[in-house]
Length: 231
Ligand SMILES: *Cc1c(COP(=O)(O)O)cnc(C)c1O
Image (cartoon, rainbow, N blue to C red; front, side, top):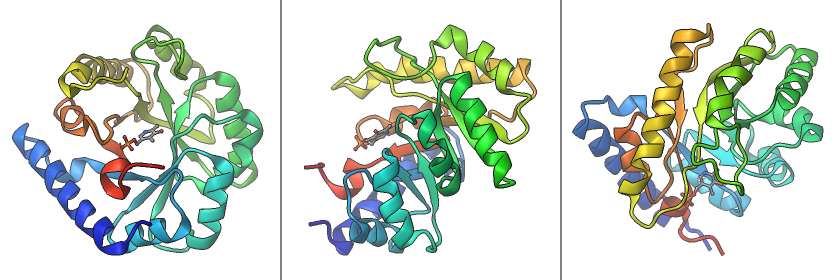
């Protein structure tokens, strides 16, 4: 069971760590937003996190998110999608999510654009980059990202707000630094070359978010450090 008091304590400890990591590299702590990753957590755990001040809830699975969104969608939090999105679930994603972090094909972008147009929404998205070129991970290859964004930049009902990545897993967070840094450089190139906002960098999880902040993360996605280990 996840209890309100420990979620509150974990969140305030985390906010302190985020603020210190930002200050240590001369960044404003308000430039780093925390996504509370709620996969496998129940409605009451997520309610506790929102009550304790989580402003953004991150979900990996559409069906699981729908149950929680139905119960908690009226509370003052944004909902972000951070899992792999199938094209046939795009319409549900557009209904629920303020930001979809995981767009990695033109086909998915086109479907999100179509579904967003139906509801008169401009859907904010990030392009997921497979920054470590791992065969097991989703995301567009780093050298394909610019091309994909060029192709989808003209869609009127989606807006590319930046990039997301999950580097390879390391026990030592320092080893993830070159991957975070590579994602930031790619983001900077996109901002120079393509007329999209692309200011966001979604990178860093419980084990490595401080390094990600030092490398420019604007969205850190954290589950375990808030709710404890997932069962
Ligand atoms: C589960 C998950 C996270 C959070 O990982 P923790 O190690 O629990 O902080 C972040 N991003 C994605 C895409 C995830 O699936």
